Length: 196
Image (tube, rainbow, N blue to C red):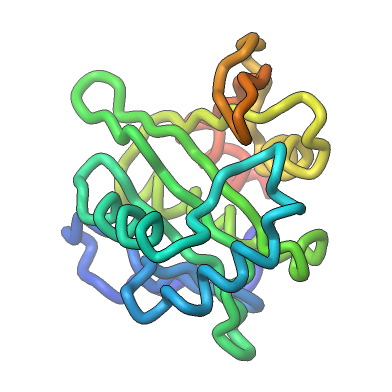
């Protein structure tokens, strides 16, 4: 159940969601001025992410990340604390597909020092609202390694359902890793919110 409020800083017709807020966190798009802070946090979190995710840790990869953000099939959200604007994690919607699918893949990673404090759970609520309301998507899919208990709990807690298993699905840190497929439909998200 969402607490606090959310705010859309652009008109409803805008193609890119921004400025969504909850009581403790807000989400916004990455910008060039985030480079130093973002890279320092991702380097600091490298061991925490090592087998689970790959995040930009150098200026070249950060520049590529910003370039991805300009594409119509990609949306990135930095999760920031309202109290001090500190970046605590990020979510990406990739391979946004329109037409008869209206779907995207969801990826995410927390900053190690802010993990397990509920920030990503709150951030995910905002990203789901952006995905299903502002971007009008029908389905989100998250592919998560079976041993990543924190990511599985985050997806499950947001209403994602396990759809299957993909052996050697994604190469991370030089190894092809098995993943579980979890998905959430817009109708199920709306129903959960209405009953919450």
